[in-house]
Image (cartoon, rainbow, N blue to C red):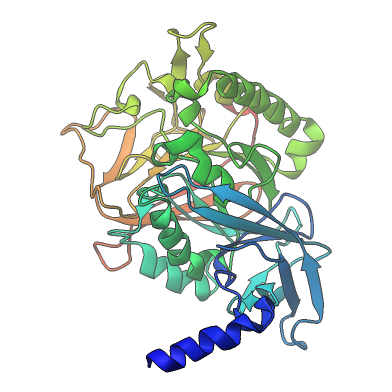
Length: 439
């Protein structure tokens, strides 16, 4: 063996490097897609470990393969751990897609291509009736909901995924390798439908650098906060973590609040709210919860709900802002449980009526869905629910949401502990949207 090895080295030394040494670390992995908020577009994101071109080849389903192509860019991301591992994050935007049409694609370069995937370009119509899977707090270890979500996604049950913070547990660990494994783990979901995200507390390391670099959400805020439209809904994603990780500066907190004000004002313009009457928010840490872990949401003086008075200037909370702008539905995670609240504002229940609490309610509805499964296992509840707590479960699981039309949203909770059984469901019905709905 030794003489053959030496012969190879001698022969290799006489050859051009490009012919002698095959490309390494240029194989695409961790493929995922996201909607950039621009009609007829989709962003394809993936990772390599050497610098190489960023290309996507694609075609309409049923047609000849790879009749279209698009080029993008890669950015170098250096993990903050001791090894300073280098990752190249590739992004390619596909444009002029036919709404509702299915496309086949692969991504990479002439030095390596991904598997073949497909996605359906989002229907741009306000009458579109999209279906979502909602969850937070899913890790590499103990991802109880993953297999069912994989199967249901590939069966075409969802038009988008909303992952409401906390990924991998944690993406920065083992010099970023845990993040790599998680992104490969969700590829069987995220390469097929837009995987829309917000940051959670487990993304804190190195100023949220893994989250900011690995995902490609709309806008120019490195995915920290953004909004997008789908069907009859305007969906707002933001970071609750700006209220807690003050060591990264107060600027983000106030900048996000100012952006939220502006975005809500724009969404509430009569011409916009007439087309997309539903305003839905998603962020990681809830304003309310009845868990027994003493988290922020268990306290009346919740930072997210009421703000912080220990900063200069004081940091405003979000409950009044959302109430004043008629936010309909607020999606949260962080607690490793499922909890559905009655319509609530300032700790007071505002049901539509005794018999039909979710028909024309007089306050926003909150859903907490953070039980997809991670190494921290379940959380527990206090024995006696709060007055605003309507239903709660410690089962592993996730939420399905169907945006039916301008007046109806259907939500149901799936239990993985009970083999996919639906353990809770509501239909939120609103004939009037906006702050006038509270009157």
